Length: 144
Image (cartoon, rainbow, N blue to C red):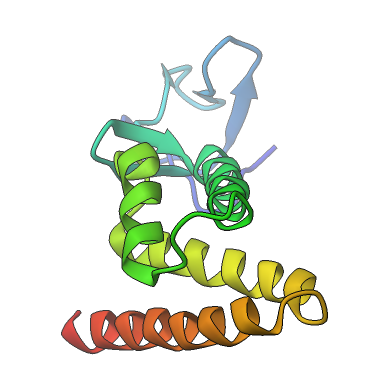
């Protein structure tokens, strides 16, 4: 059996097999040499709290969207900056400011749908704040 693109580091043979082991291990069918390739960790994202798998980051983003939505629906401040600060306090170790702004934008959009016909004043105030958040995101994108 030959595994495409892999050659024995000892003799250069391309006749390689995979050995059943806990770690990915190859064996050369010509010289018998076995080795485990040095593979970088797959799917990890760097955060302030260290390396986290990207699926965890997506889950954290979902949690952050739900948190921001709760902040909005609790009747507190509707200020874009206030909501960003609250989300950043809880999720800033895992999410970048850009991701946090996106989370807040998603939450505001979701909340706007809920208050559209129930509270016209809250809807108009929040629409203005949504535009402020979008401007912050655009400024951040241009700065990066």
